[in-house]
Length: 369
Image 1 (cartoon, helix red, strand yellow):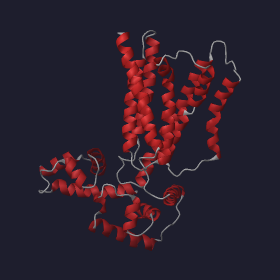
Image 2 (cartoon, one colour):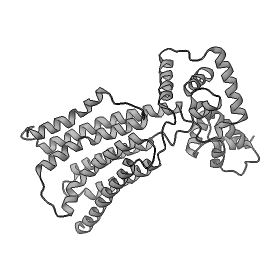
Image 3 (spheres, helix red, strand yellow):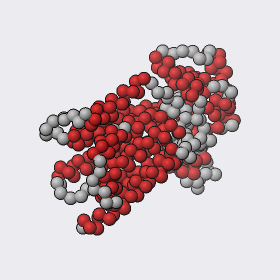
């Protein structure tokens, strides 16, 4: 069995490393023209991730022994993998973020590892340097995975201030990659505890290839997250922060009444909510105010964020279409698209939250009356 699996395992490794280099080239070259900083950081993470297969790659081309210095240097470089992944998530969720002095704290672990290798420090007789290095990588990975998940959770709430459809910008695919990496790590640990013999590489490498292909697909189709200027982004977030702490008036009561009426007239007459990619900036242009003033107007005048406000109109439109004789033979997904939604999942979720019923059940109940 081993002689059959070995060539397959080698083939998978070649595909993994080749795919990583190709994807990294696309991201570093900024060929996608979106999420530039985040994509560059993700590309650097991928290149370091590829280095974890170096030992197997060298073995495949007949190199069995290599410089101890090379291994140590590679070890120091690999401590940047989790850091770069975290920073890519950070810039996906906040593209205008600037480096701060506190960012240098992330260099502590790479510096400590380099120091240990440089001065050949002994950690302990029963704890060799390789096991110590693996333990450091695992602790570091756990920390940055947790902080990345917290960033993504915060992002899911924040995008409702700017986007009327979350599916294309909610970055859930990054969460799925994180959970997949956790799953494969647990699988490998349990396998090694239960089965001391046997080659696990083909399973680990196969799973890694699936994760990589999923990552490549989602990275290449990921749109720009925030279609808004840095200044306006900061103002909207600042306005939201001040609202939570204790209000700062951006518009007078009279201005709120006038703009509220203007916005309501726009939504009823021109129905911009039917545009699937409607954003805070685009709606603000329609009524000729800034995005952060529109965000304030929605909070103060309607007690809703942008996502809630726009999708309230989409649900009203969908209810009308579901009851229409003209749309009697149109599918649920067809009605979803004609109401401004970009997917059936989003339509079902928002519709049920707004009405307490799924679109199908709403239509069935209405037709039976």
